[in-house]
Image (cartoon, rainbow, N blue to C red; front, side, top):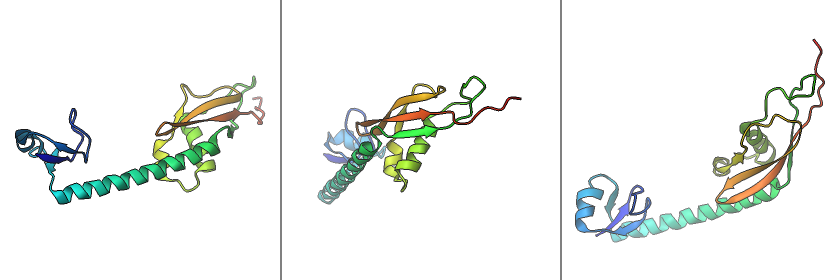
Length: 159
């Protein structure tokens, strides 16, 4: 029996895969639990079209991410946190600070497909003045590096 999976099924396949299963497995387990439905010839054609559309969307997203990686590669983002008397940084620069800065500077249209993929690879928040090379994982195996510059142009007030 041919079925179309409606959800990921461990050991069988992913959502929208077309699979051949035994009649008993399909009728007694997959279909009653809404994990799959019987695959008619019309349904099979619709799924093939859906998968083709998803592949085109995925390729477009990958091309956008590659373009963004080229723009970001070696780019510098600067932060000016408050400094103490001995030029120690008050607070820290976090993944979210870096991500927000990247979005404002390099992704003005706030493309949701791109936003969901961005991962800043930072083990702990930055608390030191200077240049810090940070790796950015854009998803789909696309990575790039940026420079985060922490400078203290403000002078602390002596109280």
